[in-house]
Amino acid sequence: MICDAHVHFFSPAFFDKLGAQLGLPAAGRPAAVVARAGWQDPESVEALADRWVAELDRHGVSRAALIASVPGDEMSVSGAVARHPSRFVGFCMLDPTEDNALERARRALDSGIRGLCLFPALHRFALTDDCVDRILARAAAHDARPAVFVHCGVLSVGVRKKLGLPSPFDLRLGNPLDLHTLAGRYPQVPLIIPHFGAGFLREALMLADLCANVHLDTSSSNAWTRYIPGLTLSQVFRSALDVVGPDRLLFGTDSSFFPRGWNKEIVDRQQQALVDAGIDDTARAKIMGENFGRLFPL
Image 1 (cartoon, rainbow, N blue to C red):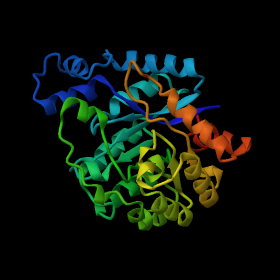
Image 2 (cartoon, one colour):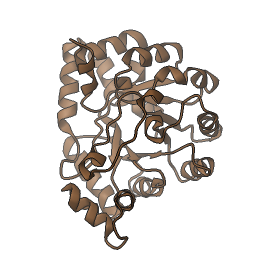
Image 3 (tube, one colour):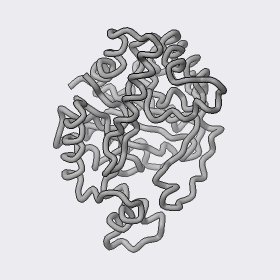
Image 4 (spheres, helix red, strand yellow):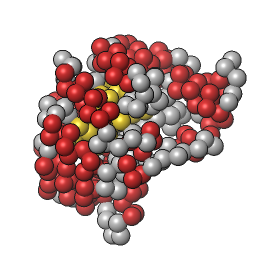
């Protein structure tokens, strides 16, 4: 069983919001942005959801977490989940500094969203700020037991580069160690750090070792390994398993746009890294799908 814990859902509303940042006229804005990027038009939430199901079927993927990739687009992912509830788990991006962040989180969770995604470098807030505490408290109080996904480390948003949009990120705000107090305060909230910490591997492992509710997702090319001379992806897997064991690693690809679709190159690379690291079949099965199913049961 393969479950992908990290897929971006680039909906019409996502492209509309990017088009607004580009200053494009409202009429036909999503299609104009898609054309600039050279990608396929999502057409509608329903059509994009169906396209992703067909793509997952083609690659033998059982389920996937779909991430609404701009604040305010949670209803797109909720719609996709409602259309294919056995295939998708809904995540949404949240900017906790916005005045309506708590209400937006409540509405998203009540609509079936099961993961709240925080990007401190993108939205320029410290993980030690009270606004983050309030989001975790809201997650802890919700009956659905949602996860909170926190992007740490290096952040590069390819679609913004492609469209020529500025990316005024502050990478100093993405240290996993800044989650330590909150992870201990809300042990019932699963915390997911993508890309093994994206350059903060040591810090992510320290946090996960100290806090049993911290999970690491394996997604993307993990190109951050080039910042550590000689480090290989198989060594990353081996180090993570040595510290946290196989039960808190979640396979992911960071797939996003069509026509590329599901990024099989990522799974091939990670499967080979698991072989090179000498990971047994039991641990591999947990990483590739079983852990996801336990965190997000149907």
